[in-house]
Image 1 (cartoon, helix red, strand yellow):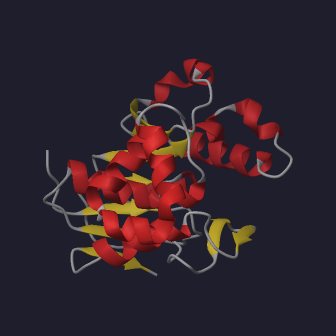
Image 2 (image 1 turned 90 degrees about the vertical axis):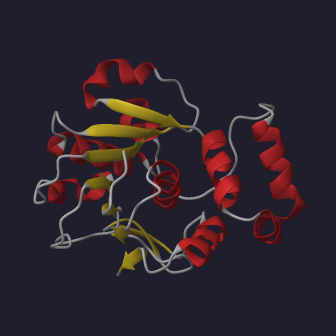
Length: 218
């Protein structure tokens, strides 16, 4: 099924969403509270597996961030919503007690790279990630490794844009709550990085795919 107007709501702090009507909304946990302000029948949450897994909340650096994201996601999740899990490769046992989140798909690093190779030209990728990056892709695609570092793959938000390009070709897409590649990267209101670990790949996607039908709302 194709949608003519799609909204992706990222994690950067927002106070409101665009007033336009959308046929499909993808959203990330930090802005969960805003989604119900839109009358949209097709809503998909996007969350990382280590955000759902309570054992990962013990991490000294990111534990509280992950825990707070999960509770925000859980608090505002409606039974009509669906969920995409960004899978980093950790065990899925934690999902047994969260199966009410209507899981639509698991996105592995391998799948993310497959979408990347399909939608970004090979020469640009080589210029950005070099031979080492291409070797990482080869090892991933041949199942000799399961994960690649953030430098070699898109952020979850920019991956969802590639996902839309693949699944919903007749689209027009607005992105809000995103950090522009190369600028300060919002993890949440209290955690801001100087730049995203995915800046190389996100920049390629931004430079090659953004046009009059794909708009970043800042």
